[in-house]
Length: 251
Image 1 (cartoon, rainbow, N blue to C red):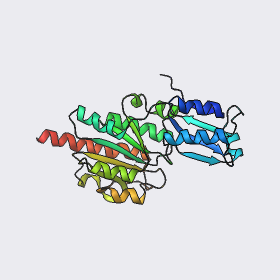
Image 2 (image 1 turned 90 degrees about the vertical axis):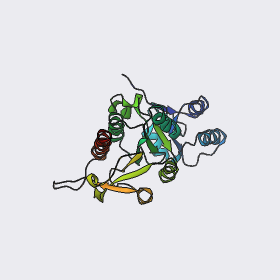
Image 3 (image 1 turned 60 degrees about the vertical axis):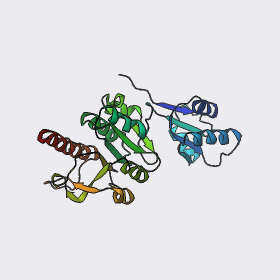
Image 4 (image 1 turned 180 degrees about the vertical axis):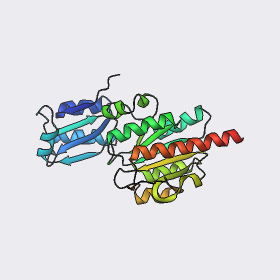
């Protein structure tokens, strides 16, 4: 399957992309550009809650593929985002308790794609990512997911911590990966659960960790102290799968 990701350059092209309803992951505008056309683009971006990044002309020049960016470059998603409500509806349609991956600032598109693939295979109902400091649904993510992006909805939210609070009202519990947490085998990871995986270098942020009900550590015997984010997600996801299967067998 061939995936396309779109880099849109130039004021008219970017404005038309917004007005046509295309999902824009990121918008970059040259510092100091505040004329009429640019202000119109910014208004359209705010309607879709798109993050606007003001950067130097040099950075735009480096990002540009055409050399004709006119101070504006947009990156459109290769796939449409879902909503959190659609993810919850997916669980209801299957008559299953929600199982959701929450990704706290995963910036590597290969890691994001691999985690989406794992989420699909582990039976998760969807993945939630933040709007800032996170990889978007690019062609690289689609390819790395090995097709899972066609089946696993991904929602983009403004605030991960606030989203966790809202999902708790739906009866969900949340566990985050943390080296200082309780060994995952000692935790009850059944029921309606959200698995929180943190940034590749910094882990789960303090505010998000405080919203979680449990912190889970993965036993490690080697000479280094951490796993790749996508690998950690896989290990913890399949401990959740194991516990759910064991619970079903015992009932």
